[in-house]
Length: 232
Image (cartoon, rainbow, N blue to C red; front, side, top):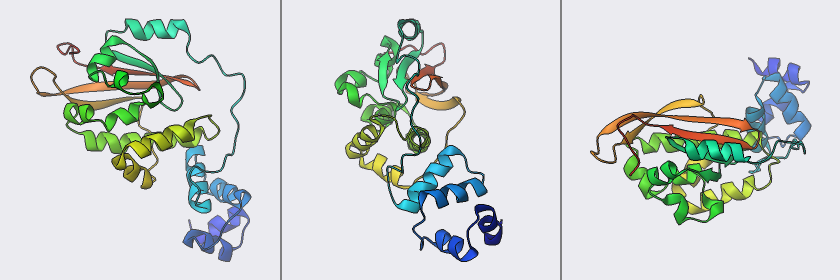
């Protein structure tokens, strides 16, 4: 689209829109919303545009979470995770682990027990020494995970504690902070492949992660490994 096209759809002047593209115009939230609508941006992309336009991170709060969301983590979900033959966990919308099974604990080398409950974050684990030793493609996984976390963050701007969770992650890992500063924004399919190092033979094997929301505030995480791999 030409600048004239976007400006017309957003109902702003071509000169103003040109200045906006160059970063020379401090647009109001309403103007940013009109431009985002003209470009048919998703909710996450719209939020990212607000960050860039206002130079604020975290971005402007645009929405509020409804007050009648389902419960945080029912016993049925906890039992489902506990009984899973795979490494599995429940997380909140920030991807902080609320509950995990023994297989998950064994697979990450007891890492979740070694940190405070508020620091039991799936992405934070990826920046640990254990993850680096276990996952041969850890750099690609980290980059993708930070981009997914940015997407999830943009969709939950009013979520209590999300900003604190992100800040703790970035303070704890310069590598995570560097990736976060790239402002990549994406989310892969809920089932996606990963490579792991076999805990017994060190052979590189293929596995899958199933990561899906149960409610807006609760997610399930399951590491589906080959049958011959048992947690150590």
